[in-house]
Image (cartoon, rainbow, N blue to C red):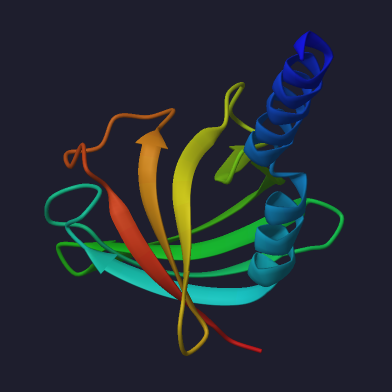
Length: 138
């Protein structure tokens, strides 16, 4: 009887231990976010600033982000490059100019859209609950 209980206990432990590991889910998410995406937001990061962007996420874990920020009828164009990865279902994005990554919850939506909600940001935004949606371009 003790042997059966021990086997059941060990089996249960192993079963539930593997349930919490999600490398396959991470790979599925990464595969779905690879490609070219566009987005925009108005006053969501910084009040009074509108942003439009296109981002290419590559299979090798790198990205290029090209965006335009508009304030008071003046436009500034910027380009950022960096690395991205998925870990435990979270999206990490680290630009070459930052030491630490931004971290987002990511949700794959219908119709070629993905939604991001900030968990950790490397710079301070006016909106602590920063979130945005992107649309697939290819």
